Amino acid sequence: MTTAAATFPPLRHPSASRALNTAAAFWYAVTAVGQTLFVLYILGFHGRAIVQGNPEAVNKVLPKGYVPGDTLGNAALFMHVAFAALVIAGGLLQLLPQLRAVAPKLHRWNGRVYVTLAVMASLAGMYMLLTRGTVGGPVMFAGTTLDAVLVLCFAYMAVREARARRFDSHRRWALRLFMAVSAVWFFRVGLMGWLVVNGSPVGFDPESFRGPFLDVLAFAQTLLPLALLELYLRAQASRSALAGSAVAVALCVATVLMGVGIFGAAMGMWLPRM
Image 1 (cartoon, one colour):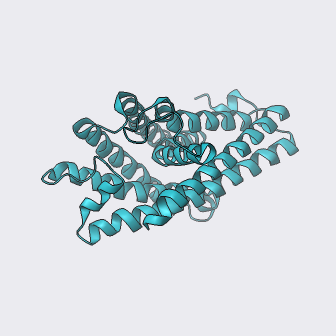
Image 2 (image 1 turned 135 degrees about the vertical axis):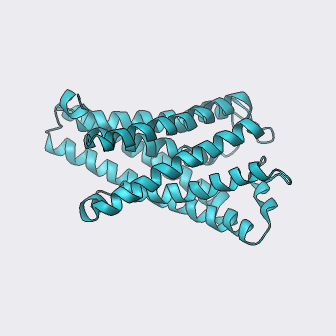
């Protein structure tokens, strides 16, 4: 099999390599903080609503959430939400190289659980889309469906490459899976970052939750992180110092913007409801 490392000789310039590694570590640190806050919000708000026997409370943030009498749909909803929290936490662990080095068995088992729950959460999400629809209209439906399909495809490829012991290829597909699984988080971060920068809901109607900005975000939540990942993977495998430095700068800029969105989401959505 032709791998990316074989197609593109490895990055050799020390300063560019350090810059790329530093930018990636910066991205991971900010992502870990933001996703940990999101997991705590899921447990603190959605989890508390279920434990206290008040599932209707989730409708404050999920317009098509709990529906009395719809046992299967409600089960799919809460499975999707619960698995999302576990998948996000498990995904952050999988990205730690120290876990692979110090506890390879834990890395393998965590990976199996991660892929299984990611697939089940995506299937539950697709069921809800087909039976309940989504806010935002057909473009939002199409973007969300695309992400669910990509999660299933990336999960299959990651497992296939791991079983074939093509670990470099497995790593790349696992990273793509992480980005696709995180789309629901990227959507919220992107939305709140946009509101922080503009100071108001520019480009969409907050009542109907429709508008050109949301149409773009419906696809950008998945495709933009994947595009940035592909640039990073190619820069890792390139001999070009310029390519490595340029991608490092782009990754740092994207991380700062992501940090703005995390701040907005934490202050406006997550922390007040914990």
